[in-house]
Each structure stands twice: as C-alpha cells, then as structure tokens.
Image (tube, rainbow, N blue to C red; front, side, top):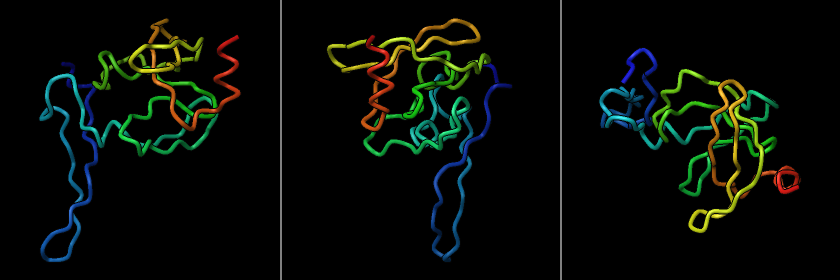
Length: 134
C-alpha cells in the first residue's frame, strides 16, 4: 500500500463524560488493507464537473457519483480503497442492468480510460439516466 496516498480522515464526534466533544481522527493504516471506514467513504462532496453539492446517501449505500450530472471521480484502485493516483473525472457512458444490483451507471475515466459501474441512486436525475439509455 502506498502510504503517501493515504490521508487521515475525520471520524464521528464523541461525547465525553465531562461534557466535552472529541473529534476522532481515523488513521487509514489502522484499517484493514484495501478498505476505509464506512463513515469516511459515505460522505458528501461538491461535484467537480457541475458544482452540485451532493449529500451522502442515508439508505446504507455509498454515494459514488453526482445525482445531477451522473459524473464520478476515479478515486479507487479496488472498491473502497481511495488509493487511485489518477483522480480523473469519470463520465457516464451508458446504463446497464445487473441481475442482483439493479440498474448501474457505467463510467469511463476521462484521464486514464478505466471503465467502472456504480448503482444508480433514488435521487439521480431521471433525464440524465434516460439520456444514457439512447
């Protein structure tokens, strides 16, 4: 694992007995190889393509693309590791259906060409999803 690509992440605020709050910082090297904490992975972000402020999903799934323009970012080498040095934008190129996971947006990285799939979310822009079906 390339240590230079890992950054500490902020964990939850923890209340202490004395009434103060403590912000835990999670060290990615203390987590199992190739994974990050669920709280770290499911965070909101601002879309680098359209500027939409994206909230994390609340249904137990991970938010991995912008619901407004459907673009994603190439951040993983393996799902959840956030270790990709590429960091390129990933454009939606089509919609696929997986028998167990449902509809998925297929993305292609504009920087390196990697192709990946992400489940659609309930709040994804319907007009954007329909345009991928044409």
